[in-house]
Length: 216
Image (cartoon, rainbow, N blue to C red; front, side, top):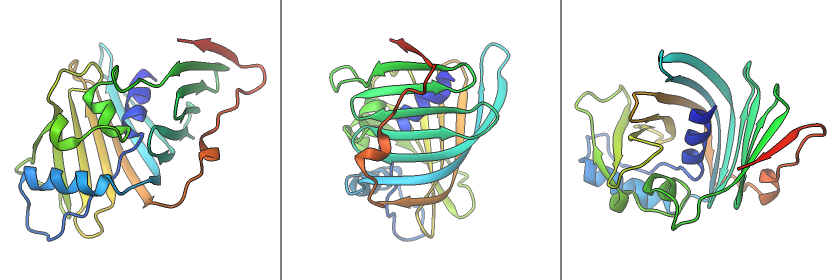
């Protein structure tokens, strides 16, 4: 769950860019265009499937659900798989609801002075060109562009973030995060739509009756 939570924070504000022609761009050109478009994206919604690997035994688990994001710092991540859960950020506070455990973990969203470069950018407060070094793998996935991002400053949550976009429609197709222990969370997105006019009310969280509230 902590791995999903960290990636959920990262997704809060993420968007993709118009990269133009199918000719492979340089890493610098690609991230500049991603950042330029990212600045124009106010919100997005998508379905997702995720694969998570981590722990001492590098065990693998899967998730699926829906994701709503509105910049800056609003997110509703609803897992509809076997381990039902919800992660909601309302702009100031982060709520993690574990349905089966009847628990809600509550913590403040990191302030700009406290957040890592990865969190700043992906919450809509940072800058990809300034805060990350970028690399394009030699072997690109068919019909898509992949760019690997590494924070310029050490980040406690992420070692690398990988974005994948469709070459034709340029829709966000995937996102993978890795940590220094070799753990990873890989997400594939479908039915991705941006600037759909999400309301602040879409990110209001109400503690379910009978749930235990644990503040961090």
